[in-house]
Structure formats: structure tokens, C-alpha cells
Length: 89
Image (cartoon, rainbow, N blue to C red; front, top):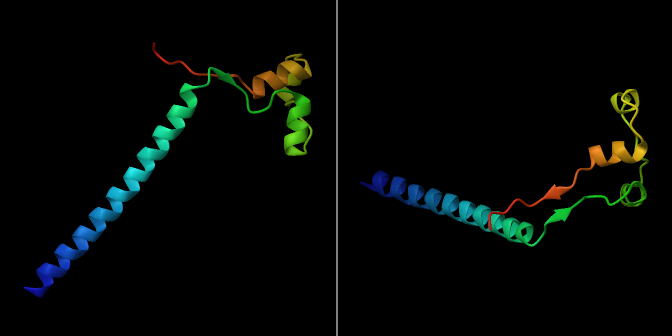
């Protein structure tokens, strides 16, 4: 009889842990979504200079980008795309 209560107690504790975890996860997703709803376009880095300032590193083109004849700005824009929020109105 005591084993049944122990199992039930453990089961309830585990259920609570999972419920709390998923509540927090859903809350974080909702916060991220609400932040994204307010934005239409954004970039992590606005320019090559901004990239250098924020990371402390030079922006480097890949061999493929060089072979395709891209300029540094074109290569940077390819590597740092604009994020567009496609929200249905």
C-alpha cells in the first residue's frame, strides 16, 4: 500500500515539473512572437563597420563569394539577410 502512495507522489511531482517547464517555454515563445510582431524588417548588423564594432572581427568573404565576383557589400548582405515579419493581416 505504501508503494502505491510513493508512486503516486512521484508521478504528481514529475507531472508538475513538466507542466511548469512547458508553461515557461510557451511563455518565452509568446514573448518572442510579440516582439517579432512589432518589427517588420531587421538585421543583426547594419553594415560591415557595425559588424566589426560589435564582434571585434573583420568581415571575410568566402571563396565561393569571391569566385562569383561579389563585392564586399553584396557578400555581407548575403551573409546577413534582412529578416521580414510575414504576418497575416
